[in-house]
Length: 96
Figure (tube, rainbow, N blue to C red):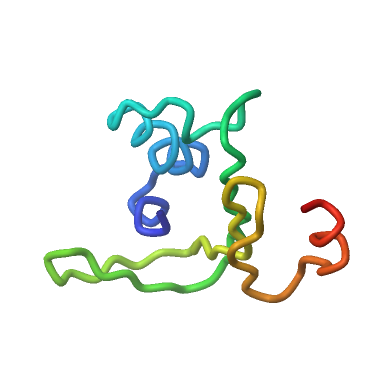
């Protein structure tokens, strides 16, 4: 996702290209969105500013000024990844 930002895509297009478009391609439109009735799969992202380098699949380096980092992943309503321990364990227990 970060390399697409470095190549000039705007953030909204990057998110759509990484969520909704793949869901449509594999014919699972219930994924890739947060509509009523869809599965609660959520990535909480941090958009960092700075100097970053990304390697493409051909071995060429692409320089960028922004980088997306995953802070938390929620799968089917459950926290499955929490990079910096920002979730309150007591709140998590009470919602399960």
